[in-house]
Image 1 (cartoon, rainbow, N blue to C red):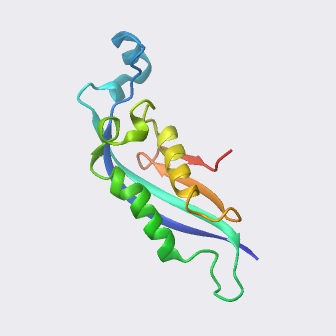
Image 2 (image 1 turned 180 degrees about the vertical axis):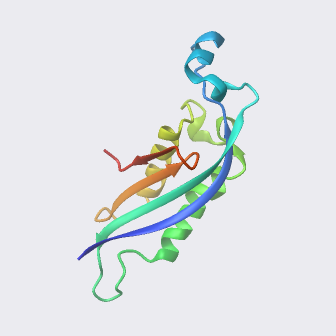
Length: 136
């Protein structure tokens, strides 16, 4: 039996969408208000989904406490109340779009999971805007 275990998390972070190799005009044209040189913030909601076969001995796909600890250590500690552009090494050269943030989170958690488990990340930047990433 395959089951998906889901864990929600939350973090607040600031960022600015821009490319250093573009002019101010082009950054403004493409990224609009998200290009504010003084940054802007979001209350991100994260859902981490782990899918696998239920262990017949424990009844678990994954111990939810272990998953919670992974999310705390890999996402909440390094991202919460941070400026993604300035404080998070993964975004020194990577534009911190929702797509890129989900990609980075997926890779940080994936390295901690057994390969037999599938992983999907859902990241809400706003209640109506969200992205999903599953490693493809």
